[in-house]
Image 1 (tube, rainbow, N blue to C red):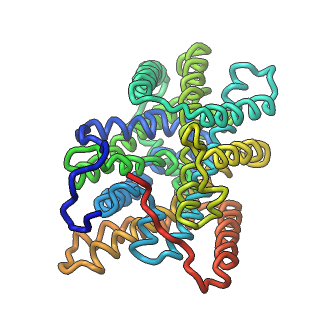
Image 2 (image 1 turned 60 degrees about the vertical axis):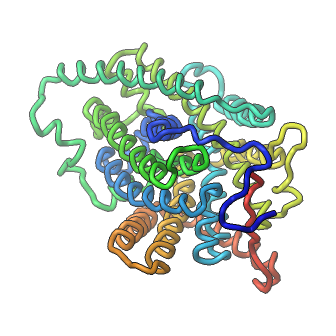
Image 3 (image 1 turned 30 degrees about the vertical axis):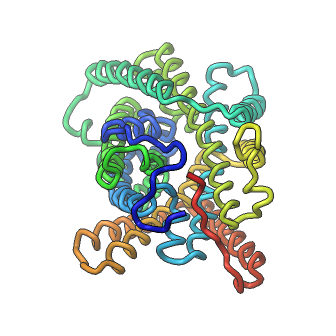
Amino acid sequence: MSSQPVPPAPAGPRLRRALSLWDLVIYGIVLIQPTAPMPLFGVVSQEARGHVVTTLLIAMVAMLFTAISYGRMARAYPSAGSAFTYVGREIHPALGYVTGWSMAMDYVLNPVICTIWCSKAAGNILPEVPYAVWAVFFACLFTALNLRGIRASARTNEILAAGMSVVIVIFSVAAIRYVLGLPQRGSALFLTPFYNPETFSLPAVFTGTSIAVLTYIGFDGISTLSEEVHNPRKNILLATVLVCLVTGVLGSLEVYAAQLIWPQSIPFPDVDTAYSFVAGRAGGAWLFQLVNFTLLVATVGSGTGSHLAAARLLYGMGRDNALPKSFFGAIDPKRGIPRNNVLLIGVLALIGAFTLTYQLGAELLNFGAFIAFMGVNAAAFTRYYLRAEKKTLLNFFPPLLGFLICCGIWLNLRWPAKIAGTAWVLVGILYGAYKTRGFRADLVRFELPPE
């Protein structure tokens, strides 16, 4: 095999560079989903004392800087697309391992909170069916779909995104009619979602932000298409930033309308599915059921996708020898999927649905996600500033600000999430020490997946 820098003619089929910048943007919006902030609305409103719009905008700033770092690191590792790889190769394999271990918690918890939310939403449709039955059903559904190797096509995702967009428009029309019918429509009413002097608290807003950032989780998936896009060095970075920006603006409009309809002083019948009740107040029972069903379908899609993503992350760590390869690095020869990992995630999703609340699960997910985000910013800073021959402010400030803002939000997670998340990291470090006999052997062996 030639080792020259110019690649030889390919011996087999290769991925086609067929995607444009806007193809990537649409893919990223579909991946995150246009309804992303709706399931979080009640929990964030409760923690931030009604300032959901403010938390989303703060989170957007953090994600924009982090998106720049992700886009730039995708240039260096166009087929890896993982904070685990970025940190391990740019800084130190041991830190890459800790980042990967933290990401594992992030990825594993996504199917858990999707199982919890779907079970709550399905209970709104058929309240006579107990929560436990729904939890078992959705955990088994996600597992069964991924065991069969089923994955939604791009066309299916586009249809779902279009359907969700139609529902958002319908809700927006109902929201405008409702707000225009309010007896008091002064400027104070329209500014309250951004700043309410009666309830504003900076620590509360930062705590809410630490949950609201879940709205943007998944934008890094754009980097996995680096080998299929025209001009990836430019378009991956632009698409990642644009998706964060579009998600932030659209999400802020969605929660802004919801806050006008449902003041923070009025408690929700169910915090986890609060947005459905907001829709019911704006348009009646039919809109309640429409929004509830739409969010249920969207979360089923997220749960199925995140289930397989978690299984694939564990497979990647097993392949790179960060986890026992015989179990985590195994592939089912018939269907070409990491079957052991799919089954394990299904079991964990079922256990989590009975032991965690949606809020704690979301916060624990963000605990791991922000460790990964801080790691990616640190890796970008190391590669493009510390090791660069020419040091520029454009290579200095974005990753540094991204790291500091992400660190600030991470520190404002509630203590239960910090304690449980720290325990998870410590377990990973102890396992690493055992695996390497006191860190005297290589902790991680990075391998690229076969082309």
